[in-house]
Amino acid sequence: MKAFGSYHPTLLMIYFLGMLLIAVFAVNPVMLVMALSGGICFCSIMDSSKETLNNFLFYIPLFFMIAIVNPLLSHNGITPLFFLNGNPVTLEAILYGLDIAVIIVAIMYWLKCYNRVMTSEKILYLFGKIIPKFSLFLSLILRFIPLFKSQIKKVNETQKSMGLYSSKSYVDKIRSSIRVFSAILMWSIENAADTGASMKARGYGLKGRSHFSMFHFSLQDGILMIFIIVDLAIVISGMVFNLTGFYFYPRMAAIPNTPFAWISYILFGILCFLPFMIEIKENLKWKYYVSKI
Image 1 (cartoon, one colour):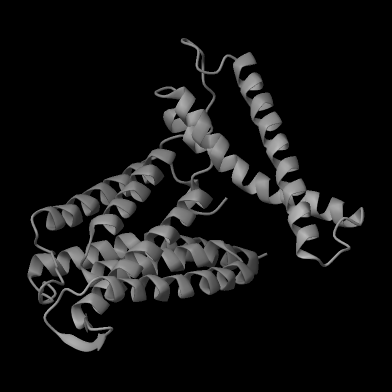
Image 2: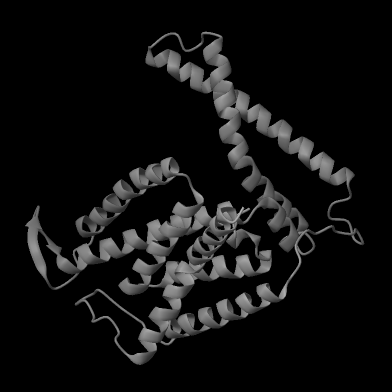
């Protein structure tokens, strides 16, 4: 298990919900760049080099595609750079498009990190007693995503060994894809039914049922949770009271440069890179212990 993922599920849920909330509603470029950078660093340290490269190959074109769409559709702003089909393409629209692209990619990175850290066991622990049906449904979704990938690969390899992909025609490829989809669909339905029957046989969701838990709230969890909650409260307060506010239209505003804004930037930067720093710390500690063997 990764170092940050070893903390209590309640702490992890508060952290990810806070990060996603800020990433969704923040417009300040400084905060968004830190959110994106923190998500990239955290996701990269958990993935292999190949997965990190594949992420970049997917997110970089997506970033520029989103950034280009806004100035083509929105013509607000008072600083036209050039005209396209008689419509002005403004500096404010281009910068706002870049801002939106940063928001979307940052959210996708943090959701990817959330999916890696918040396992189905943690979801069941957090919501099993409160909303058991929803927590079971959510945990099944999180569990089935990697299972789907593995099962699709197995079905593809099986069909190739049977010679079903021997033809290079598009019709044959479509038929083969339909066969794979049909097999995966039936497999997923059977798997979900078996899991539901198994959970029901074990008395899941019944009143008075005891719950085994591997998660224990320690002093370290408490200290880190207090820091995260206070940090989030300060940053979100600055957003609510417009102390770190920013806007692009009609003229782009100046980035807030007040003492409170700088405090918010520093605290939010620490918050964004907190998982990455914890992972680096544990990796260095592990290498140090290995070197002493």
